[in-house]
Image (tube, rainbow, N blue to C red):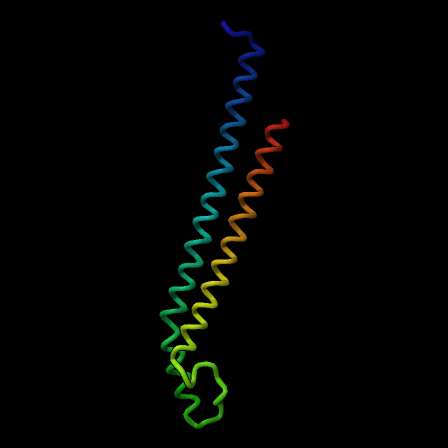
Length: 113
């Protein structure tokens, strides 16, 4: 039979494991949500880009905005999408690394308690 101190220590150990698992789940949910949101922004922008380009061409038919990024080449719209996708990917990567660092700091704090 275990003593009361052993039971209490076991209970604290299980509570700490549960807390770590809960924090890990929250970080995983935040990472997954940020990736899904970024993919949705990229896909939405890619879908809306041709409509934006055609409306821009209609407005520039008079020649007032010849320096516009979308007037001369349809490839420039895809370049903008690529740059936005790269920036969103970078933002997600930085967010995931910060969440992982936060999780490691929380685990190290829990280890000292």
